[in-house]
Every structure is written in C-alpha cells, then in structure tokens.
Image (cartoon, rainbow, N blue to C red; front, side, top):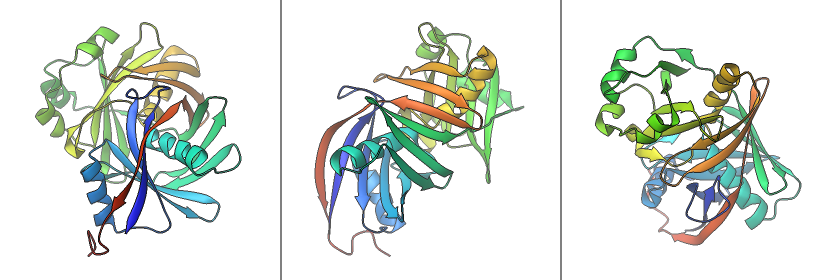
Length: 272
C-alpha cells in the first residue's frame, strides 16, 4: 500500500513558519487505527485525511494521540493541497466533518476558511486554572460539546503576559477538555493568543485556526468590531485575518508546500 502525502506550512507565506500539517487525499477511508498510527508517525500537531463524497470532501484530523472534531490550519493546508497539487477547479471547496459544514475559498493569495462560531460560556471553576497557571487569569471561559468541556479559554491582561507565560504542561493536561487557550489584547494586532494541548500530544500548537472560532466572537463583542487582526505568538508564529459574519467566522491566511512524499506499508499494517 502506497499513500502520497504533502506537508504544508499554514498561516504563513514562507517555509518553516506558521503551523505544519500533513495531508493525505485518499480514495477510501483507512481504519481509524491506521490513521492514528500514521499521525503518530508524522508527529505533527495535525494530520488530515480527505475522502471525496459526492461534491464534498469529508475531512478528519488526527493529532499524534487522538482524533479532534475541528482543525483550522490543517483544513487550510488541505485546501492548498487540493487546489495546488491536485488541480481542483473553481474558487471554493466544500468540506464536511464532525463539526458540520466547512468551506474554503480563494481570495487572491489567501485562502479563507468559513467555520461555525464556537460560543463559549463563563466557567466557574477558575481556581483549577489558577492553580495550573500559577496565577489568576482575568476571566476563564469554556467551550462545551456533547461530552462536556472541549476547550478552556483564559484571558490575560496583556500581550506581554501571553508571551511570557511558561506552561506547566502536566498541570494543563489535568484540566478538562482537549486544550487550554490563553489570549489578551494585542499591541500591533487586535488580539494575540497561544494554545496548549498536552493531553492530546500537542505541548504548544504553533497556529490554531479552530480556536479563532472562539476568539473572534469573544473579541468582536469586547472590541465592538467584526473584522479583527490576530497573531498567535508561538515560537513559529502566525498571522490570521478574522471576520465575524453572523454565526460564521471567516479566517484568512496563506499556505506553502514544504515537502511531498510517499508512505509505503504492507497491506495488513494497522488493520484490525
């Protein structure tokens, strides 16, 4: 069995910045076990798998440890691969996933994600976050899913505080949900953020599109504007252009191919 893959740096116009993702376009689904093994082998924050179902691309995302319900940068990377490596026609691609319908359109040099708003609610158990952080955030919010808390969002006082934050990864992994997002007003951008998900194998994600489905409505209400510039200030860093449109969030960024290759496996690997 031979499977072609493409590694893309998303939310950047140059290699070795933004957030890397691996993309596989498949003719049919592999087993969940094998897809998880492949994601663990690549050991990137996300590996995306795509299968065409009618006019829509079904997309699934795996971290090195788990499947996740939504991922922005790997969707951007997947659209880049479909447009640039496989010559998909038109200016828009439709996807379906656990979180519903997604769309990516081309606008000049940028690709624009069309994602659902992920509404957060105030979380009362701020003490748990304060203990994990070693400090008291200004606010703590939670994103709830079918099985309880999916993500936590903590608001810090300044960009400097976000940049200086030193994560206690074992303590963060004990908090509920997939990961913890920190954010603050930006100095040159409307807001900045960082994202940590050690419980699912991501100590710090370089640039996280899906979290901006929470951040954009939060900052839109707080700042009184619907178009916002964002920067995820990880070591690699990434810039996102966000727009709130009703119940949808438009997230624009660029992407660049950095590697292509072929995975060669025996037919029985990872099956059963």
